[in-house]
Length: 205
Image (cartoon, rainbow, N blue to C red; front, side, top):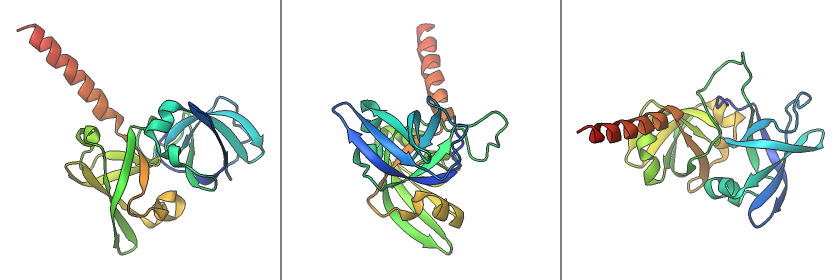
């Protein structure tokens, strides 16, 4: 479990692609002294399991075919910047919102507008994700916890403050770029419960 509060912007330093998976190495300035193999780290919002530590400032992870199919890692290149957040520990502050690290799909940047020191970005999501995008609700983009400002069909906008622009990789986005998106977990649970409720009510008619 994560919070969507990015702790470091690392970089991809090695990629080995295979037919049904990929092995990637990520370098970070975070203190990894207490990290262990098997620990979870959110990389651009995607929960990855540490498989090894090639260097003192580097960790490795294996990405499955499912992960590559649903995230931007299918187009990742060596040198790309990645948002990093270690797994939430008991007692840590929950500054963002509950983020699982299970990416739903990719969202595309369709507009960028400067608003003083802030930047408003508008994204388009696949039709199937539209029901989970709620005005003033939460969303994780490349692992960053953000509040949704406006919603229109399959598009939504968020406001990026100067700190977010300078301390995550969202500040480098351009129109047409894609980001990993995770919708709010609560909405998905509500939908599932409503589906079962509808089925049970129909069966009792």
